[in-house]
Image 1 (cartoon, helix red, strand yellow):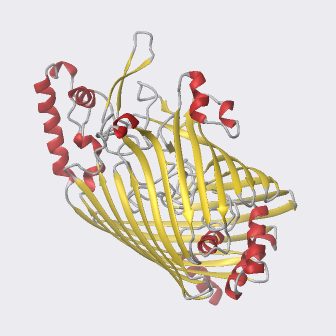
Image 2 (image 1 turned 90 degrees about the vertical axis):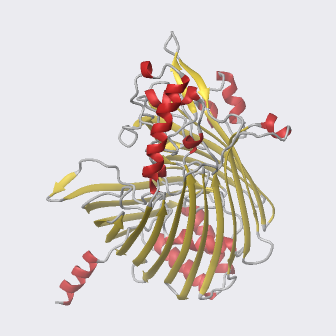
Length: 582
């Protein structure tokens, strides 16, 4: 009878399942690593995650040698889990109940799983996670808080149907050759870059998994990272963005971390996003991508960024990061209104230097300027867009859309070993930049052709055309000498209050883990229709042959959009679950 009760509880209680493998950025190890870095116990990790088993072992041994009793205990548990046994087998389940816009939904997942962490030799390691998931529905916008992405790497395929349920598999893996000082990783996994690993403006762990090749040189005073991500492109057709998926898109980046002092780190990153071909020139180390693409007359999309971290006293940490697509230097020098196509993050946190029931408090601010991360490279909207900063139909960097900002405060309590209580509050502002456009050249195309005008990362600022030879021409461009950051009439305001309890219980005999989670998010969404298309692109050009007619129709559609954009939603997200890996 007791066994039957346990099975029922196991199937009913369940939150999203995170694999317990080195390749997984949601593994509890990375949460503890963030704390160890905040207090200065660890100061020399590379900027790109996930880390291979070689680097993880180095980190854990350092904590065991230099941490306090509680930190050492945590490190030993992770060490046993990653290195005590090659295979772990188990299962997980989660249940989510959502009330969004007064609509109720349930989501259920049940997954047997296998995990692999194998150090074949001191120079060769393998990490992998595999599961076969039975579920009633995949994550979508109606099941997730706004501007959040799914943590599941499950491609939406027909799969196998079992009544009302479907069955699909998920697989992440990495193979690494090298030492903690020099290593090359090839894998299929999520990635992150920079000091803000929860939601980076550079490469975020929230993005869908991708093929990846990572080369790292990690010295005491500096580190060099090179990364190639194999991405999936989408079209620019607003009707098919979520379904049109194309291969052959790449993100290449390299970065340099400089550590003049143990408590100071300065980093530079150079990124190129392109597709339709494979370009070896972007594999050259210590090069400048922008100058490299000049050989081909600048066909691709390049971004540059910088980050800075300072830890002046033990436990106190200041972080900043800037990522730039384009800026109007001429106007800036003249102190005129200028183009600022960029994103940024700033944060301050305090973590208790020693093991304590109060773990840390973190305050962060993120902004994404209008049209940041957007781009276009073809006049045919049904062709793949290889240049916008997306993968598999979602942002690669910040999950905020352009023309947005966010303030988030997060507090973690650890009243007893293995039990975390996480509290956070997130406040977001967002506006649709297209609302500010009054240029009739742009409005004519928005009214007659299929452009995305919802203010998302797919809403680029350029209108295109086709030359007599079939080549793409750039007809006009919005806000080349201005940046209307949150100056629109209709602003969306979102507040998300979140409480989560997490229990991690190590299975000492096998080095496995039992994980229990319980969470709730209350979301207030003011003006939820802001992120819908303003213009529908269904008007005949013959009906817009004068400026007056263009403005009349544009004002009509804009007025209708403003009326449906305003309103209030109060949403609730409950989640509960368990995972056992033996």
